[in-house]
Amino acid sequence: ENEENYDCFIEAAKTCSKAKLEHSSNANFFGVDQTVVTYFEIKGIEYDECLLYVRSESTEIEYTEEIIQSLLNNGMSQEEIDQQEEELKNQVASLEGKDGTCSYSNYQDIVNLFERWKEGSFSTQDFADGNCEGEYFETQVV
Image (cartoon, rainbow, N blue to C red):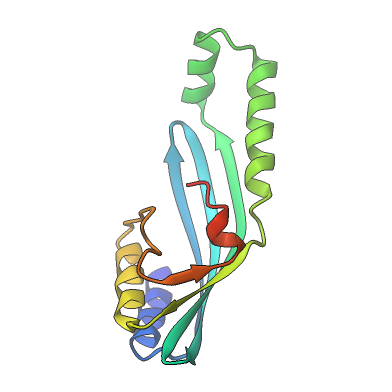
């Protein structure tokens, strides 16, 4: 189902036609499970550039058994671990609702971006091709 949405969005990006996509990704960073839901919308053409709107919907994190065990082995107490996990949860919760817009003079950059994501390939340079502004781009943790 997610793949079809991707293909639809990628097709729309080729001509900068309006489209919406809600993207959910799961990742494990150093023993922390992370589920991120992001909303994307192609807004259409303005001043010969294609506008891509991005909004962070939700980020959920959870410590895995491995990291808990590892922290316990390093002398942390269960209370300290719980507190650390709670702080991290609050930190990512503050990203919710942050949004931004990128403008692309070359629509193919958007096509390429979502084709990479469809393959599951993410990078900190993902939005480098676009001219991006907004809180979403100032507060990216990962």
